[in-house]
Image 1: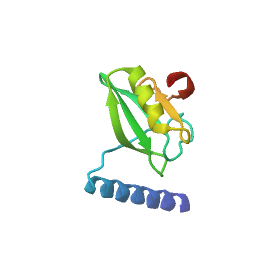
Image 2 (image 1 turned 135 degrees about the horizontal axis):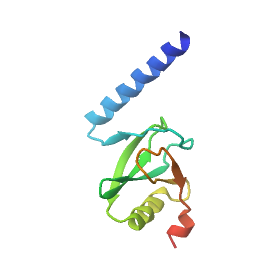
Image 3 (image 1 turned 180 degrees about the horizontal axis):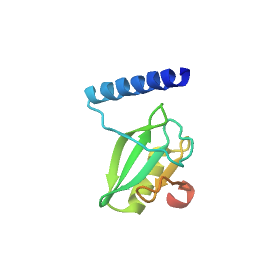
Length: 112
């Protein structure tokens, strides 16, 4: 019973945070973490969406992303993501929708 209450409280706080971000005009998306790694704030995620690649930054809760950009080409998306990540953050590629698997990108191989 205690777990249900705490998860409800966490869910309520997350919903409040989403509403606040929308009021500020910031675009966010919820990431489904099935078998993904333990994301940290600032990590960059590249996802295939329709005919382009969306680039997002993980927020403090480790579940939501702030949309940063999109690219039509995977190589361009990875290069941009690695540039955005810098030396302090990691980049992950969500290869196939529905698979729930994330592959860590070696930015040293992407950005010369």
